[in-house]
Image (cartoon, rainbow, N blue to C red; front, side, top):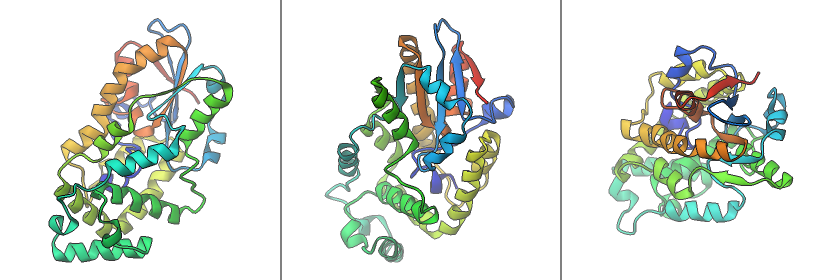
Length: 297
């Protein structure tokens, strides 16, 4: 299930070993960070990149946290979506000396072509210039929109928080670049990416069932439940290299930046909920650095 969901959603939720060891580190998506010489607290919120914005109205303490911070921090700075999309498309193009026929068996090539044609009205003749991970992202986001028609990918939680900062005249900081994110999502040989995409397509019903469970757990801020879901046996599992690139490596880099950002001024940090939990996650990492990490409920 991990590969079916996390790659398209840019690493929504994964390891929760810390949540299991510390039961209080669950039941909330909003966390207050204080102590360690901070003059004012900062806040961290775990987003779901494709969840309806109306969910934010149900989050206790969210408005107060926004009002009491002086800058917004996200994974990416999302103010210029058109430029960001163009950059992602450019980085997601297949090398000129590589074709999908080189990556797949004839049978798998026909299967992928059929599935893309059914979803988009065009197959690999038109879409084959894209790397496998880009097509995987496109396919899964489109599938999610079909399952949940109320979803608007142009109105994500991450973008909404940053727009609140712009409206208030506050600065917005990005923890990484589009290049950083694409490198994390597209890690691994192209042959492996293509095989992963075939596996995802052949197990799409499994993914549909799991995404319904995932959404319910996210809505309930059940981090321990999400741990169990994502640790379950999966038809298409991540490699250790992929898991590290998508989650742990990014968390490590962000934990190097966040102390300085929060010391500069009280910050509202909005990143995918995956990054909040686990022994290598942001909550555990900040606590290890000496901060007090408390759920806002």
